[in-house]
Image (cartoon, rainbow, N blue to C red):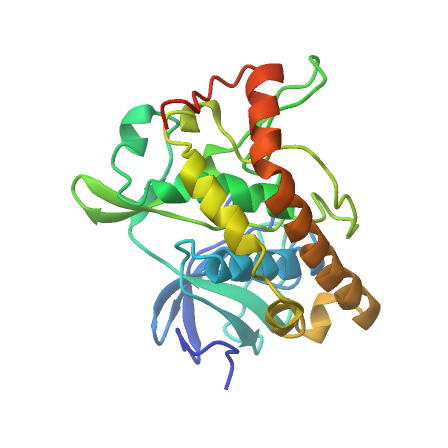
Length: 279
C-alpha cells in the first residue's frame, strides 16, 4: 500500500496535469486513481524537511478540529516521470499528497470572507498558526523597514455552492522551522501568527478560549502517533523527532495558557482593532 492514511487511498499517479506550480515547494497537480491531488515531492527546492512540517502541521489541524483537505503520505515510485521547471526530476520516495477541491485562494477582500460558512475556523487558524509558529500566512514585522508577510494564497476557500465556501487549513511547510533550517525551539515566542487585519471582524474570543482549552487535552501519545509516522527519507532523525514531540507539547501548554492574554496585548500594542467586547 502506498499510503499511510485510511481516509483517502490513491494507489497510483496516472499523469501530471500541471507542473511545478508557483510556490516554494513547487507542487504538482496530478491525476490519481482516486481523483486529482496536489503533490509535494522529494527533490523540491526547499528540501525534504518542509514535507515533514507540512504533514505535522496538517495533522495537528485535523487533530484540533479544523477543516483540512484529505491527504496522505504517498510513496512515489518515480513513474510517471515528474520534472521541475529547472530540469531536475522529482525523487522517488514518500511525498505529501492532498486531494484537490474546487475553490479559490483568498483575494484579500471582506466580501470573499463573508462566503465562509465555518467562520469559527478563522479564529482557529490564527490559534493554530500561533501554535506552530507559521510565518508563511500572515506575520506583522516589528521592523518598520520590512513589510509584513501577507500571503493570501495560503488561505483557501473550498467551494460548496455559488455563495458558500469552507475555509481549509493547509500549507504548513514553513511552520515550526520558518524556513529551510529545522530549529525546534522558541517555545515561549509571544508572537501572534496568521492574524490578517481583515480577520479582525471574525476573530471570536469564545472560539479562541475553546481552542486553548482543547490544547490542554493534547497528550504525548497523540503527538507521537503523528511524528513517528514521518518517513525516514524526510531527514528527520530520531533525536529530532523526540525534540519535536517535546516542543509541540510544551508549545501547546504555553499557548493554551497565554494566547488570550497575548491577543489582548497585541490589540493594544499593534492596534489590530480587535474589539473583544463585541465578539
